[in-house]
Image (cartoon, rainbow, N blue to C red; front, side, top):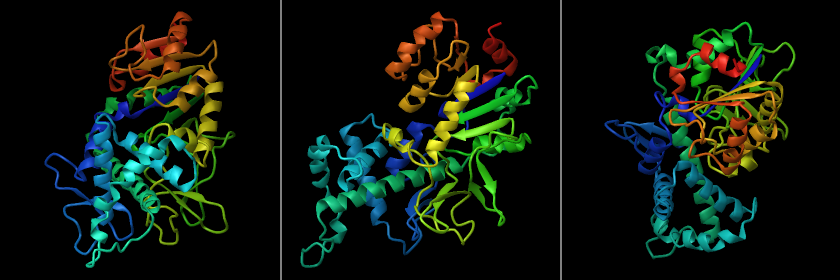
Length: 391
């Protein structure tokens, strides 16, 4: 029996902030509530949280990014931080010629009209602009910085994970029991989350797992590839990257990925001031084609083709790439258990894309889909195993 767990942010709702909370932090540059933490831009061009802004650090890009994102949010009050990121990337990609989108031109003109206000700190004593670049160049830099800012806030917030000693042992009990089950040959854990909670849970449980990283002779953890022979029983596939992955270039033109906090090893020079994570909406479809995400997507596809049992939990069925693979690799003998506290026997989650909505009824009719109205932390492996085996 091969089991694939497809896990989204919903499984961590008791431990980590979800989209609404992250959006509030992004738009306020403050951790929220009674927390004293505020966001600041360090001299290394990365974003951190502190009790106060360090004296002498220039914060004009922080203020510009926050004000621009608030302006974008005012155009659509339902936008979360991922939708704001997507908007910034669309503008940036068009202005830089990465992915042209002529339909954006009128909206980009509206964005450019905000620049005089956002660049007011660049106005000289004689009324001339010290930054005399074209509006397109300023806007391209602003949207890139806004994306860096969102990445920095998300990275720092998710890194402040609750102490695992306070984590209810039931939280991942079903997953860990599946990994320990001797009748299960392989467990593929495919997650869309950026945090490192699963790695820490596996380490606490002394559960060996493979994630594609290997140690080099200096002890650095470098992305290598997933092994198909002599691999661990448990494989962790992070489709959207991780807050502790960083892109660097050791020598020659090829980029590499190192795991760990930036600055842990001074011999590594990060190419970007943000971790290797996928944030946004439809832009993820294009980012899946870039390394290392394309390797993870390929492993996910192969795992789907080989497994006969899929457990979905905490996932909203909004990612078109993931949905496409679920449907495109469908097998008659594959059973799917969907765990969601609001799911019904006849309807998919309200957030599901149309492709999943169309497949949902067919899977139910064929008796291969089992909706479980529950939280992931309240499920157990023996019951899931029975449902996956169709007994």
